[in-house]
Image 1 (cartoon, rainbow, N blue to C red):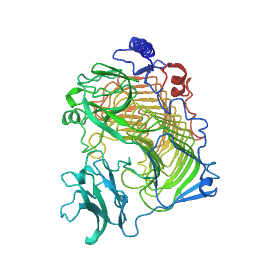
Image 2: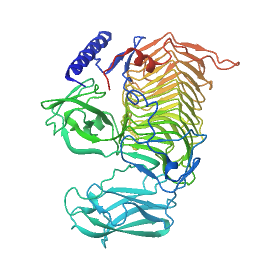
Image 3: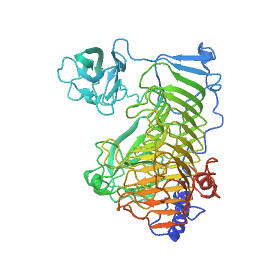
Image 4: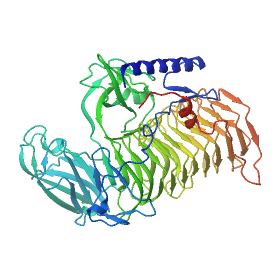
Length: 619
């Protein structure tokens, strides 16, 4: 983008910000004033810039290399690390990929690198084990009795079968030349299995295999390199809506660079949001550098969160894989192993389109970390693992400005699901059967779920609420952040409609029909502030259920307006907290003739409205 275009865009952003401020205080260029007078986050950046390419030219056919059309078997996962690679079949009915990869027959083996590889600080070392009764994976160098690296069973062990570690962990302080790596798998009842791998430690900087790898292994994995170079500390607080980020040093950043900006989860911040979680990434976003101006960088879109210097906020360059995709095939996993279907890791502008994934071990199609990725016209059915953390999710994790559209899932666990700093993403126009909607962990913010149909029946790991947001006291997930939105959805759930655990701010629950079994329509507690719950149809099948529960009196500024509550106890808003606005709501009897009709907003899709009405610069 030219400097003239940048200045023009800055003027447009300033004008938009000025218009937003006219509607209320404290609004920024990151806000969009909707046609209904409601201020929304900006989702115009979501998805592959310019859309998924209509027809990527064919560069090679597998038939040219001796394969025959139809069904293809994978006996080892595929890792792709080059840009502009698209794997395309002739449609899920004609092209079938069967993933037959299973755990090593010996019980433990090195998945990577190959024997004799030169190992440097950026070489990925990966060990695979038989998952049954596995308790620990350890990596030793030569005859050392102390492991250089270990992974041990923990609360979220799930179906763990693998361990990954960078070469820097094993080469540090050791002489270059020939060495032997030893992988040890420890099982129940004291059983231990061992595998060895001869390698060569690099003799000088820059030597050694540096193939990117993903923390999560799919049958097909697209992997970028990720974060590189120094962390560049901010010189001034980054404010929500800022397009200019001032650094102590730009460290050689240049226009076009991809960057991540992060505010670490310091004790100060955790105390301020009552976060008891022991790990995780919370305040993070990825952007593109448009210009470098002294010790400041101008980025392509406004910040969505504050990034304060007091927490050591920094910018770091990232190297993603770009413009890759999968299209038009059926993918099935035959082994009960905690691998996934298709994974985009450290990926920008990548996509899955018209893909049917059945019975993945962990996730069907997943993006993490990711920017501007898109999952469209896909069907995702069932998973081998549905218990334990981190399995059978459909959504976005550590992903920014991604889009999911026209996807159908069955028998997953948490779908649609956002977690770990995910922001600016859109999940829309999709059907999720036997799974619940989740803001699952890690300060997710400014995400949209619209025009989705959700049946949150239990039996696959669903919690049973239509939507669930993790509470701050949860030591495995922590709280979720501001301005998430549910718009014009149709939900059936056995428990509460929307369960908000706390520290949530400024959420919008608009124009939905939510049918609740035993719980209230909406439950909130612990500084759950500033929400707008309006123009919904709530059906309460339990005669004792109230409409909205504001459990604690620290939930301020909640507006409850123009909702219709069918059935329940007749009490529309209860709890020790009181709403800032409670008007034009109706308590109505439960009909015996069927469900009341869904709301019919003048704007059926707020996402499509923004795309049609909010100007944005070329991407």
